[in-house]
Amino acid sequence: MQQAGLKVEPFFVKDSDLDGKVFTSTGHSLGNRSKMMLQYGQKYLNPDSDDYFERPTETDFELREEIVYPTSDGRYIISYEEGIPAIRFESSAAAN
Image (tube, rainbow, N blue to C red; front, side, top):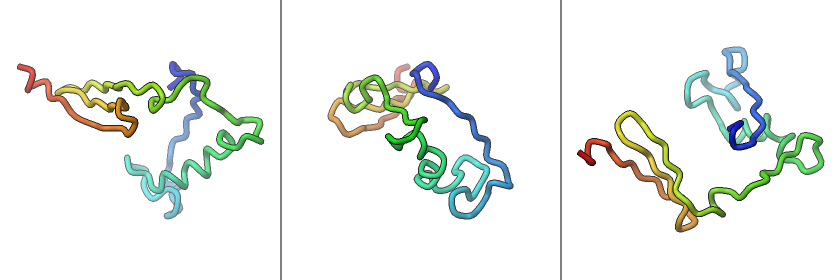
């Protein structure tokens, strides 16, 4: 994220953060991601905020390219070529 020019502000969810509304778990699911964004990201989304951030480069939607995420057994590909993201998995076993 930093390589992409985004400001990274780490936040580690602890048991004391669990409120049953925003955070419901310290595991991968965490809770309500929309509420998390509104609670913790609002200062970056509000144009009147000193912390407002607007991406200086084109988005994946605008670039209309494929993003590749390699895994130990293949790769996930998210394609924006048609505008709406399409996700597929290509197994490395299928290539052999």
